[in-house]
Length: 491
Image (cartoon, rainbow, N blue to C red):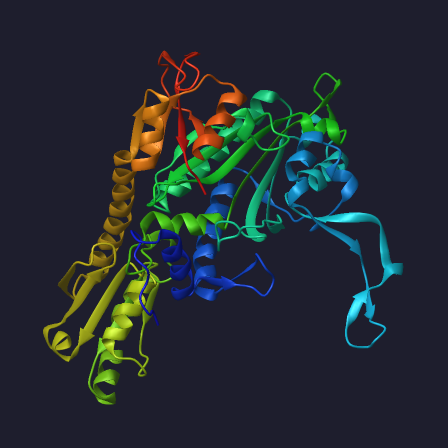
């Protein structure tokens, strides 16, 4: 049970880490930089996974699985790709251990060195495109729309549960197309899928945009992204979709015969989201009392807490609520009856509040006599009584209202924390006093972008897709600029 969370206003990082642990979402693993996702945390991830998987399949994608290990030579085939991931790769050099000479442990067997070292999957473009070389011969084989749910390893030195760990879970889509236009359309389609999931299920407003060349995925022609603003004023990249051009097709010699019988390289995309979305969910909605979960992703949407004195009253309440539970389940509501006799109601209230369950029902002897229940919503803390007759419809409406209210609240926060800067001094002042998103003119050069990053820690999060043309001058160099780009400090 919670010992009390740090306040967000006093130590946001400590609040986050402690909330993840106390809400039973995850904990640090014995392997430095890795995490153990606990059942309640994994329950949230499962709902994300199932929802996204359905959305992918609705757009024609199918799932497959590719090896965890990638031959080192594969990674070197695409120059930009290897440069982008080289510093994060875990490498397997041997395949066997043996007892140490002193008999007190084990050592790597020097005679069991691999002929070719293997990379533990940091991303799967190379292993997948090597397979596509055998799968694609003709335009009839295209488009190839494949997704993979998997774990990946990127050897991070500074880690934080869910947000940045050495091993994490994700999905990665990898598609092949006959034309450039089809591949770009796929890239944008999947960006829209991510944005819809973030806003309609996570209740998290996002800005869709394209990355600057410096922030682009290694090996991509263009990287599209969705960016969200967390409560501490930092941005979080919540998903990316990459137009790969013909880069990986050329690296792995993936050609197809078009309708005219001519050979050409296929056009590719890749796109993915990860358990980082768990961190985004926590930091978008939660408060000093604990998690606040949007109903569409809550493993438990309604918890029922009995108020009783003695076993007889508990038994009577259990019998009474059975009909309520059955009706709620019949319409798809995830409901849990907390019949534990080891804790008092106040303890249970605080625990379910900490875990972010959207709606709590409390029922005691008097409530049964009056054929009513006490209803409390997690997002606002508001309580009211509701008759048992018509309760199912009332709860459905309430859950929908909580979902919509969370999105509106997060959107209002983002709008209140998005500002324009017309000079470098104003830009730095906003960063120092407020944080949040800053819309400012930039001259389009990597040199200016890197200077801003080095001097302020702020990066270009994206060039918003809905950005209107607006003549202006770069806040640093004064050179002409046609539109504002989105800056922020970020996770």
